[in-house]
Each structure stands twice: as structure tokens, then as C-alpha cells.
Image (cartoon, one colour):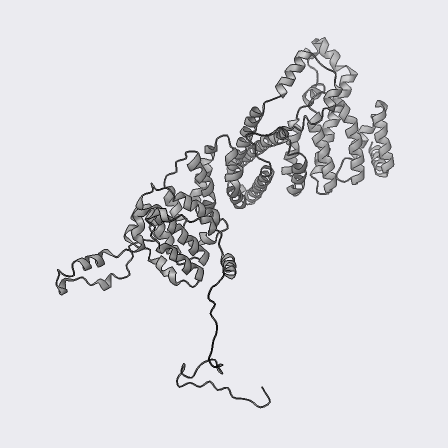
Length: 595
């Protein structure tokens, strides 16, 4: 037996491409050459040359495609192989069916088709396969997804394709390029992708729970391996979900194009069935655009909500927060379902909180989310590092929007104004510019804090009032109180910061800023902001993206009316005049031979 197998293996290695084409042609011409089917399947392997794999693939695909509608399902084919019980022996009809050679032959063909699909998946995710071969293999698998289920989308094979891609060692971008360019445009492909992603997430959640229940002894090496594997799977799931276009509320007819219904050749070749049954199938397959949009939105919501429950790696976490307010929230069936995820993100602090603010603000303003201590958390985010962060532009615009309401209490507006003015002393010039614009808007919106522009201390005011009445020995010594600021920069409770008793002396300091644009811009606060008809709010987006480069670019484009010139009545002969340094001489001895 071993010698026979080695002989067959040797024959397989000795086949030429021309002989392989002849085997495929014989298989397609007559059932008498059905023995060529297992031999052609043996060439579907990552170890085989790519041209042999493609030739066998094309022959087998041409052979199986006309038979797909005649083959039984996997469950029925497996039932013909099980041992017959006494009940089966008593049932004469089943006995005749089981002994029918045609039924046995079709069941065998179905098993070979399943083997063919499995071999294609192995070639698809093999590191030895070329990109061109992967494209052909994936196209063949998608054809089976289209045709194998009697014209309906075969979700089982498609799920196996995505499962192989996610658990493959090959870079997922190779597969995503093919999927997004050819198949993601079909609505049924997107629909079942959401379903598969939800299943993968549930599997990962179950595996995470199992790994958490392991004993302490097993935590040494296996925990790190399982954690790395979990993070890799999460990244791949996100890479599959993110490029899929979100469902639209009112999609056009072209957006409802289906992969399973894009080829009508298979359906036209079948014999027409009963008219009533045919009409019923057509009615069930045709759905209104509104129904399709609702179902897509539901699957979209389930896929994303289940994904966001996973322990996301930090880089994926930030990437999700940066785009979720545009790509996910507007298309959810119920955006309030994200409140737990966003509130936890906002409570983390740092850059994560800054990035979560945009989505949380949408839920609060458009979907009625009530978040306690929102302004306290927002106040805590005001640190110098936020003015050099990557997403500072969006954060500063949202900060201005959150402080826009005229119903905010005076102590809250004063605390934010004072906190920002204190930060203006330690941030780059671009940060000082946007802080000045923010304070300008705060003073204009909240007239009750305009006294912060110039406010004397209580002791100074009492001294001025009682100077004529009290004797000299009873007057307080105000020198001790000069320079006292009642604002507590370290206080987190906005009611206890003491901002209402302070003043914006930091803004006056910016008049002498080393950067000319900052010192010029501070003069805008000298206008009377209580007269709202004569003033307008500043657009924060004009300053929020500022940097040293933008300031320098604005300065070199600025037209200057008066240019300082170096004018001398007599040409100077030295760098310093003798009167500048009395008693000093700056004579350089001349050496011979040197200039």
C-alpha cells in the first residue's frame, strides 16, 4: 500500500501544466473521468506551484458551479453516511433513498466541495501564497458564497472566510484591499460582515473570561501570550469594521445592490416552480429601502457596541475616540447606548478624556445625556500639555462651545477664565492667543464677571474709604497685602477656587509678551465688552490650530507701515562706544603677518 501511495505521489510531482489542463478538460467532458477530481484537489495546496493551483482551481470551479443547485446541504449529506438504525430499516422510503446511487454520488460530491472550500481557505491565508493568487482564491470563494445557497447569500462560508482572515498570520491589509475594492460595496456583504464581527467579539469575550479564571501557576507565560493574541484579534476586527461605509438613512438604489443577486444567470437556468411559491419568494426577497436601512442600522449598532465592550489597546482606543463622533454615533439606532463607554473614557483623564469630549458633547446636546460633574472634569483637563496635544483644535472648540450658555453660574465662568489666564503664562505663544480669545468670549457672554478685568483687593478698597476717618496708627499696613491673589489654582471644586475675588492680572502681563502677535492681540480686551451690540465673538477655530509655524507665517506676510532703519550720522568704527563702558578699552593687538 505504501508503494502505491508513493507511486501516486511521484506521479503528482511529474505532472506538467499541459497534462493538468487535460485532466480538467476530461473531468468537465464526462462523468467517467470523475477519478480526476481527487487528483485535481491534491494540487490545491500552498506547496504547489501557483500556476498549478490556478489551473486546478479553474477546472474544479467550472466543474462544481453547474452542480451547486443539485448538491445536498452538508447536514443532509452527512446523514446519508451515518449508520442506519432499526427505524431507518423499517422505513422503506428512506431505505430506497439511501441506496440510490445518484444520492450517494451527490453526497460524495458535496463532501469534495467542502474539501475544496477548506483547501482554498488554506491557500488564502498561507504565507507562501502570492497576492495575485489570493485575489483569485478569494474571488472563487465569494462565487460560492453567491451561488451555493440557491441564489441566497451563503453566510456560513463567508463567516469562515472572515474567520480565516482574522486568525491568519498574514498582514490583514492584503485581504482588506481586495474586500474593500470589490465586495464591500454590496449591501449583503456589509450586512453579514457586521453579523460575523459580532460573533467574533462574543468569542473573544468568552476566551477572555476563561483566561481570567485560570490558576496563578498558569499566569506566567500563557497570560502574556493570550493577551497578545487578544490584542491582535481586536486590532484586526477594528481594521475590518472601520473601512465599511456606515448605513445611510436614505440610500440610493445603487447602495442596495446585493452580491447574491448580482448574477441572474443561475436563477434563469433553473426551471420555473409553482407560481404562488415563486411570487412568495420574490415578495420575501424584495424589501423596501426603509426596512433595509433599519436592519443595516441594527446590525451596525450591535457590531460596534459589542466591539467597544472589548478591552481595547491604547492605540486602537485613541483611534476609535478620534473618529467615533463622525463615523459611529450618527448611524447608531440608539446613540445613548454609548454613554457607558464614553463616560468611562472621560473619567480616565489625560489625552483619552480630551478625545472622548467630542462624542460626549454630542450625546449631551443632542441625545439628552446627563453627566454629573461634567464641568469639574472639563476644568481638570485644563493643563499646559493640552495646548500642544494632537487633538487640541477640536478640544478648544468644544471648550468654547461648552462655555457658551449664558445660564452658567458666575463662579463657574470666573473659574474657567481665571484658570485659562493662569495657563497663558506657561503655554506657547499660540496657546496664549487662543486663551485670550476664549477669555474674550467669556467676558462678553457673562457680564457678571467683567469686574475680573480690573479688581482691587478688599483691603485696598477699605483703606481708600477709611483713610480720612481713621488715625494713622490704626490704618492697616497694605504692603503686606500687595500681590495677593485669592484664586486657588490647585482647587478642583469650582465653588471654592476664589476666582470671583481675583482679577485677570495675567492678561495684563501678556501686554509685555516676547511674541509681538500676543502683545498686540491682548489689546482687544481693552474694548468695552458690556456693549454687546458693538462687539462680536471671536472664532476659536481661527486660533485653535496655531503653532510657531503659523505665527511665523502670519508675521512674514504682515504688511508693516513703518520699518525701523539703522541710520547713523557717522559710520561707527567700533561695536561699542567709549561712553558705554567707562574705564574699559577694547583694543585688539595687531600681530605681524596677520590681517
